[in-house]
Length: 76
Image (cartoon, rainbow, N blue to C red; front, side, top):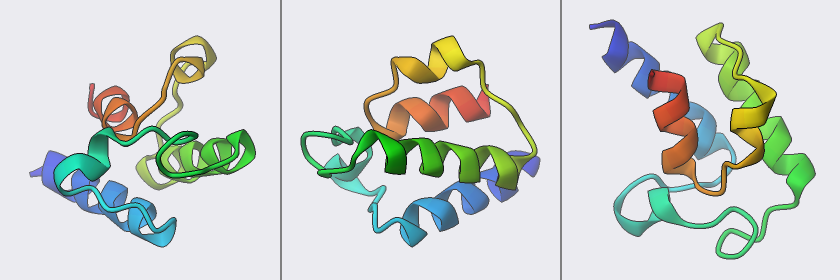
C-alpha cells in the first residue's frame, strides 16, 4: 500500500513540472526530449526526495537521464 502512495506523490511532482509519465514520456530524456536545464532537473529531484522523505546518493543521481530512472531509484 505504501508503494501506491509513493507512486501518487511521484506522479504529482512530475505533473507539476509538466512531465507526462504515460507511454514514452517516462523514458524521455530530460535535456534532449523535455528541454530541461540541469537546474530544473536538480529541482525536480529535490522535490521528489522531499515528498518521499528519502535522500538519493549523489553519484546515482548524476547518471539519471529520464523520469523512469528517477522513479526506479526512489522505489528501490
